[in-house]
Amino acid sequence: MKKLFLFLIVFGFFAGNLFSQDDQMQKWMEYMTPGKPHQDMAKLVGDWTFTNKLWMDPAAPPAESQGLQK
Image 1 (cartoon, rainbow, N blue to C red):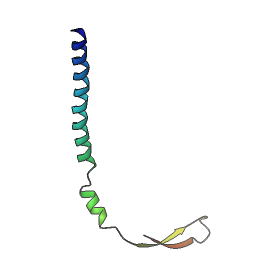
Image 2: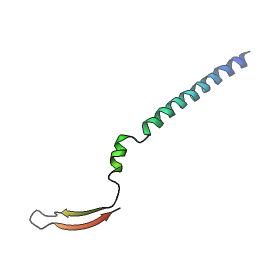
Image 3: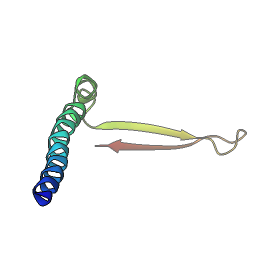
Image 4: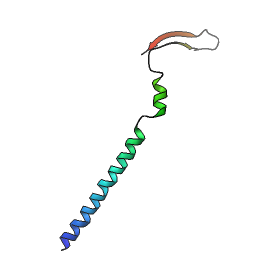
């Protein structure tokens, strides 16, 4: 009888954790699903050309570089 009681307690503990993890996983999946901000950023996908200026010394002219970001 003691073994059965112990088994039921242990089984109940683990079964409760399994159901709890399913709920947490569902909430996490909903949270991580791409939403409106991702749709807004999708408009910026593509190739970008850029010009970069870097001043090493305020008295010196800037070092310039150009590039393409894909």
